[in-house]
Image (cartoon, one colour):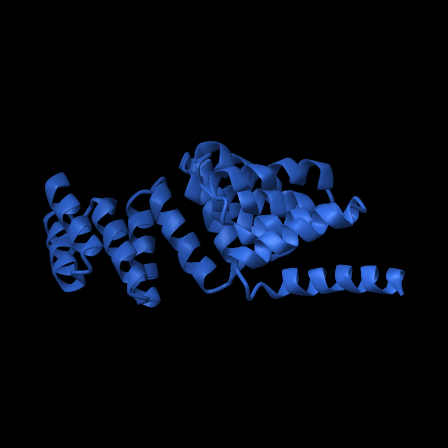
Length: 223
């Protein structure tokens, strides 16, 4: 059974969705009381945006096993993609409480708070995601951004610097370091970060506008 599940997952990765669906269906027919088949089929359906059927399969898995953490994670992802962050949050919480200890679930749980502008509540989950996957620059960046939004500026600064160590082409990390430099009244440092953001991403409008404001200040002071 494990071999069939793995084979079906590989077919999914190869974008052979019909073949994968056929195999998942066969797995469910062979073991209708095993939640794993329903979860994997739900993952496939979610991947191809058949959300209504995906929800049915995840719920069926939970009926079979109340502790099917990955089914709750699947439901959380489904609602997250629909921007229903409060419902997504509830399902991610259940996955974590059951014991799903993966960076993804902590990251998405943190992001449900972030999208609802509860930045301080997002912090422990985004921090945990970054701990579990320290090489994922986006997890670290969102943790830093939540610190900054929560007005923990001194704590955010080294996080953005760490993001740049992981990904030196992260224009948004440069932009946010520029904003922090402005907060510290370091106009030259801010300009340097905005220039670097624009070198990486020339259409970065926030960096472009911030740079223009600095140049206007300097121009007016020279006038």
